Image 1 (cartoon, helix red, strand yellow):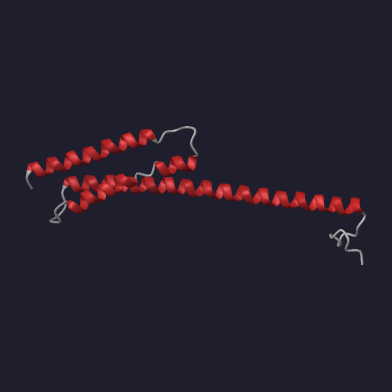
Image 2 (cartoon, rainbow, N blue to C red):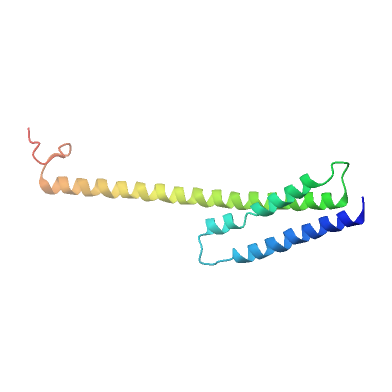
Length: 133
């Protein structure tokens, strides 16, 4: 393998890494929703670029540049999985909180219905105003 294609491949890896660092810095908005921050931190474009680099290389054996590219790609996959797991945990927390809020609202509604029934002097089973039979 000649030095010129290797140098070009290294320059391309450096370009991918430099471009993605700028994207990660832009995702650091502290007022944003944590879910959006996690999703913005998933290095999707970088994963695509590393995958393209690996597919574009000659298939005759493996070389050090391909090994570095694979390591970077695996690191990005691990990062993506960690961020997506965090998003899933946040989603579970939000759903559980919503379920508790719904349960509390139902309890409050039942209490208010019972109070209205007692105030109107109707039997417990009679919830319609005019349903005296």
